[in-house]
Length: 130
Length: 112
Image (cartoon, rainbow over all chains, first blue to last red; front, top):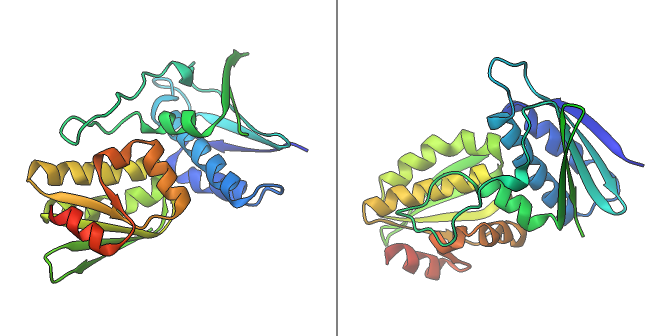
């Protein structure tokens, strides 16, 4: 049965999200790590970019299904399709590397499939894991 | 997230990290990590005690190595857990900061 939790998009809330994932039944150690990682990256992105100028704090709901493993993240922030984020340049050097872009790259690498919809004024991202 | 330091006879400084290097963990150690990286020419980062690593933690490592690079210094990563190593490799971090599993090799990488 899918489980869900709702949080405010703020850095200090993110440990609660990881703690929630850790106690979900049916996940092995590696799955817990990967789901925590992908959710943290999506939520960090939401904290940094999701709040409309002058808008209220963004709220988001995570729904987790284990068979098959799938997480749905729905938020009421600014419209944003994470699949359209510019890719991180390949083979940067320490001289040229910049700080951003690694989070969504990690999500792309660890999730086997991702989809996005804008539904009733909300962003809905679904990540699947093999 | 905890951070501590050791000075080796070779001149290498070991930065020992322990805990979850998530956004809150990275924020907790960021200033100290940056200061110690910037102040040393050869640094080995002991990752054995790091149980979780996300992009904000990678940012801490990369910015520290970048700051060392501008002063002709070198950083090496040492003995991460397998899943943490997977994050380091898939993110491309190990193309920027070399990784070793034994101390002698890490020390050589840091000393150049």
